[in-house]
Figure 1 (cartoon, rainbow, N blue to C red):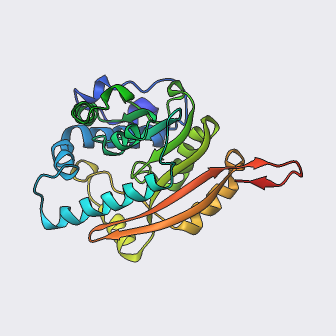
Figure 2: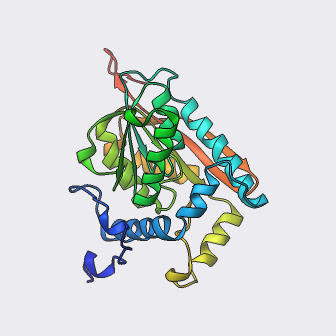
Length: 267
């Protein structure tokens, strides 16, 4: 059986500086996928990602993706309180920091983390320009690192969509014990077209393809959630499909529940 070290792709020079912290939801497949994603976004796609998340001119296709991501971010952050003073929020997979900046403007203490040091540095520059850099703790590393501490809310926009369902649940079960109120996440909905594209993409050598998003049906996601003892205190309170041109993603809000005096679970 191959060791984790043997199957994990060697990241690039900037990605080697990324600190992943202590033990958490680590498996061979998670580590392999994590290294691949980090390598891709830090070295191959960082310039394109900066352009996509700015107001710079982009192609018609990327413009629809930009518009879809804007709608998705508005949806996810709309499920959090408008006043976040005194609340600690994790922006898991912060990219260039757009959501982190809005969260900081609401008064939140934000921990913004991404696998790509290049994107994190760009996010830090944007936050400074927006006047909220002092409110955001930017880090490059693993969003599951327990050293990040506990949070009131977690935002994971298009960050766990690159993992297959077991690893996706592994990520959520790693985060859940350290989150007090709500996690808002996205998954790629399982459609015939997306599933076909994903299957075809897996036929190409890994070096020739970007980390694909993994389609997951809402039913499979719900069943996996119900099957996890760690996620027992959590429930799905709302979902929303966001479609805009070439962007298609499902927003899901997970709420931590409590037991009332009668032993009835409430959210």
